[in-house]
Image (cartoon, rainbow, N blue to C red):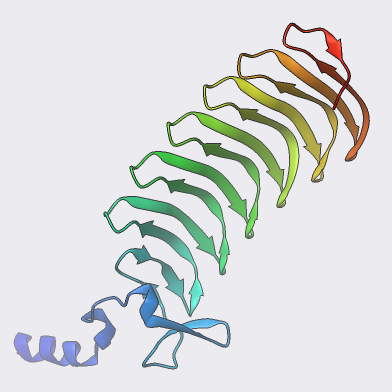
Length: 196
């Protein structure tokens, strides 16, 4: 009796429970929704292979991971309603962190950091709803500060300073809503000079 009940239940389970997950390349986009090539029904589930994406009713929704051919993680993050949402990271082929940041509704939101292949921070920029907004810093590959300043609604705003690889101030500029209002330049020993 138990065997007959189990057999009856198994017959009514969807065959997708026993099928292997499709690869991302095996899905096609129809009317804005992802479907298996052989089906007209929007896909729900996770893809397998080097690009592992999560779908709900044909829309990217949930965690994803992508891998290089060598098996090393390339990037990871998540989608919500078809848009990037939440923390995301991307890596060089050797596993070193390339960048990290947060998305909100498909747009960068919060701090976005990019790294040189040696692991040294290259730059850090604040974002608000997809636009640069707030402090930023750029660095030389040797770790010395290269440029610092701020953005307001995607435009340079306030004092910006540029530094040489040895850490000496080379230029200072003042911006107001993207418009340069003042600047001063300095030589290798810190004396003012004419700006180029």
